[in-house]
Each structure stands twice: as structure tokens, then as C-alpha cells.
Image (cartoon, rainbow, N blue to C red; front, side, top):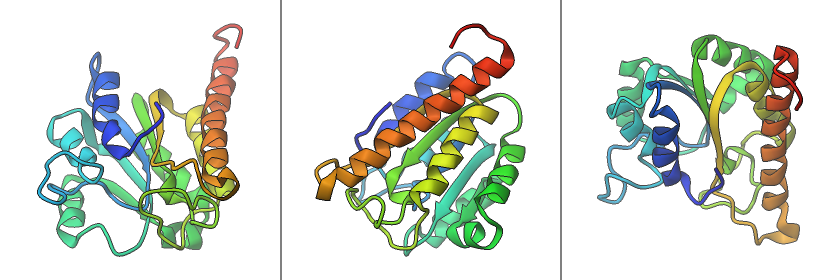
Length: 202
């Protein structure tokens, strides 16, 4: 699925979990998107992940966030998710340990079983993706995120994925270009996984 803002994750993930939920969630983002309300609204681009957990669609023990930084999310949101066992990796974790180590830890948490991959392009540093709703300096590089998406699709049992919060019309359409490559990387990982499983032609 292609966004749109991150509010589309709620119906997207719910539909993918309908036949066998709750499912795991791998979430790349600057923000947690686990607010109870945003500007007085229970459903917005800042609340979908809380709704998914509260509605039993996503298993919080198999929910991993990667790339968080900046002034938001609120302390109460972080406390709420910590109490449920949601796994969170901040940008300083990536900087200290490297993206490979963070992914290894994330994949261990997600384990076996269905997983949805959701990517907010604002997880990228604005140098790589200036066209997004809430840019935040100090983010992932496009190379790191492309690798992460490719490996996630190869190593996990993905039942769905989305790339959201892309504003295409920026200088040289830089954000649209990287969003396009993120989709291609996810599809590449899925193809490699299928070939390795002997599931027939790609």
C-alpha cells in the first residue's frame, strides 16, 4: 500500500491480519504514532499504532519500532508502549550499534509468523527525503533504509507492507525517487525469499 499519511496503516494492517491476527509489526518512523489522541482526534496519522494494539490486531510483544528521534513522541506514549513490551530502537541505537545489529535484534523479537512492514519516509534524514509531512533532522540514510527493507522482506513472513508520508513534488522529486526504491527493495526481498523457498517461478 502506498500513502497517504500514516493513518492508512490502521485499515491496511487490520485487513492483513483479518485471517490470522494478531500479527507482528515492523515500523520504521521518526515517531511512535502511538498517541491516544492527536489534536483531539482518536484516529489520525499520530494514533494508528495504538489503535492497532488496543484492537488486538498487532501483538505488542512482536511490535518493533526503528529510527525514533526528535521532540515527539510524548513521554506518556513511550511509557504506555514500554508497559506492553513494545521494542523500540532509536537513532542513537543505529548510530552506536549499526543497522545490521539493530535488524538482527528486531528480527529476533518478531520471530516466526506473519509480519506487516510499515515505512514512514520521515524516518530518513531530510537530506534524503525532504518531501514529507514532519521532517526531522538526524535520521537514517537511504542506503540504511533500503537495506533494512530488503532484508526484512527476505527474512520475515511479510503479509503486507506500506510506504507512507511521501510528498512527491520536491526538488528533483528526491523523496518520490527514494520511496519508489523502497518499494522495489521490499519486492526484491520477497522475490529472493520465494526463490530460496523453492516456491516456483518468481
